[in-house]
Length: 321
Image (cartoon, rainbow, N blue to C red):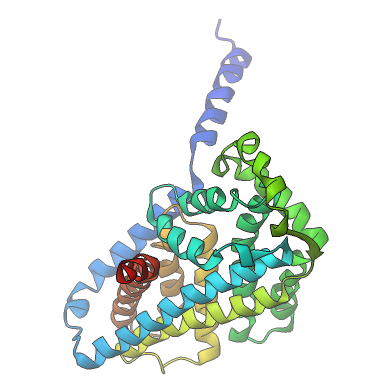
């Protein structure tokens, strides 16, 4: 006789195994890429009619400049963040480490820039401080992005909800969050404590006891978001749609899309996710073909800026030789 309970008990572990193997981030990214592909297909004729003259090239070049500067600003914000957790960064070239490793985010997996930074920092900092400085950086970016979201509606509840996110950077909160993130991201950090900790006694000048709220790094990170937004705005200007929507609504939509692209994606740089959120938020307000052209160009602009930033120190070293 067929035993229903026995069948269900065998079936449940298989279902749990399927769920455990299901990558929600990859699913969302693929769904967004299909959505973008469908939009491009639907508007292909209008996209093909978009003209790129010297005026458009000039706007896109300015967009590359803003995006390039934003990476330098982001690197400086990380330097200030490291200082705020009780480390003395003047003995470490944090800017160089950031720029050298930032390009690794394009490698499959999306974690290699974190892994590389960890290896650099572990030469001078403790395991705890190295991990904390790496895990807090995307959290800082998230909080800075949330600050701009209320400018689209000026709703008091959205203001309170988004701006209260700054509380997570308080010393007590961030310690708890880092502990949870460390468990979630344990695969990022190699277990090489015994090798490196022997050298830390000779590097005590890099550790201090002055831990404080990272208000300076948060302010600089907000400037990073603004410069990133200016790069996006230049792409909209290139196709004459930048002035068709209030600036507050535009930066709010950009920040929301950028945050979701930061949190969700399986692809580097929020590829597909960022574009889908922008299309969903602004597609009914702006001409879709021109908006798609702007988004495609912004993806190229941001990629080129990452490449240029990664080349700064190699080119500088080459010129010295």
